[in-house]
Length: 335
Image (cartoon, rainbow, N blue to C red; front, side, top):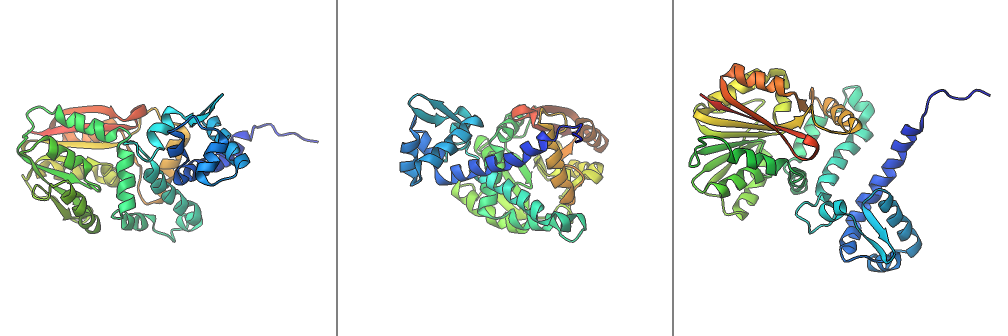
């Protein structure tokens, strides 16, 4: 009997990891991690709190312990640091809605893969339609709080000679947290949040809730079809936007340059080609991005810096953002 020469176990591992992720999601949805914040708790206590059977609950807790999301001890089970920060609904870094959002993207690809490969389905249109929903905005914001948002705000605070009483432009601002946080930090600043019309309409309530309605105006705009005005802004921001224009990065950089007043700054945040990411994660992100109709979700430092320099930007700054250098921040000033 012949035996195989190669090891197929990594594919089997991927298959089993699907069950593991489903277990994480259902545990978060049913409040298991919230319950374990009061731990350590026995499997029987967890089952009692959630209305479950003890034996399968113990099996679930052991699975989560194997994935290092739960810690098992002599008196029961408790959350690991990762679970306590990211899977407990009261944590400022809770990722429940972010995981649900990405799961919806992944499910769409899985269910429509053949149609996508044959060009019979438009995932970009499907995704664009959903950006204005409350769940999508909340999920996008939760993901930003993994570090990219905080690092972007920190970079802006270091920009030399930033006009703190000027006008900002948050391109593709979605949930608006970046621009709202900046306006709260700079009381003399005003701004515009530019996004697809249905997204701009939806974010208005968030802006009013923060009592910034008089300073931050949501504007419906599709940058694929419209252009920014000239000499209008002192600070322009684009987070996870420029990858959609990678075929004409120089042209977009020139438009951004023209939109700024002299001395104004542009700040970009996007996925980092050189980040310390799992190769499997990167490969799947790139696949989803490409079947969605985009070239890449990553932009290399040299590629973007070259486009900014050709557009006329000076004083280029760059630094990684988020855990594992997942993001890349780059800033440039109009002469």
